Length: 242
Image 1 (cartoon, helix red, strand yellow):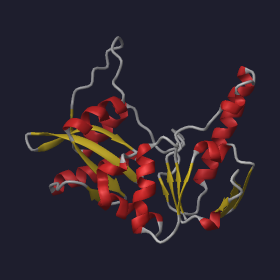
Image 2: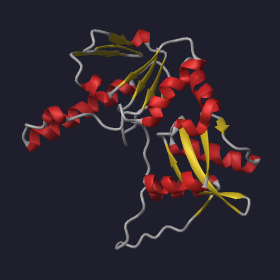
Image 3: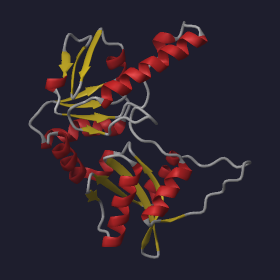
């Protein structure tokens, strides 16, 4: 089974849930954060070099570690409505405990995960605009100037991404494979370098063309899969069933 962990309104995840079926022979299941967190039972055992877990769901089905060949992880935050009536201190403690449990659970998987969790977030490595610009520059991309004046807020990566979708070009890097429009060897190497320094297996990189060379706009470890089409889905299917 390929397990996609995502919100029920995550359009990219819903598209992938349907599209990847054409490239795999195993079942594909979408698991929402609410279904995971509000489950009647989660059993998770870890030992040196191994892990064992099983999630019993409210629809009387269950998912265990031996059922899953690969996971698409888009769990950006854990639901916390069930802590609403707790005091501020107890609520903060419970939220941190739940976050730590999910971080450990996702991090202990013995199957491929796109993308694994990280200390920065449950859905993987996250960088702010300054960190993204630094990594892109070191990879060899041109970047627009960044105004760090204290009276001017930095743009967020989602804000930059919205403009890139309309005006730029999108590539995806999965492990050592670059998926998207043709690139020169130099630009391809820059994509690979940025993906490695970003710290995740799968990344979407948005650029715009400036005099024949790509200028970095933004990147994310939560890709919009439809922009990668069948080539991206096929590559993901291979990675998740390897």
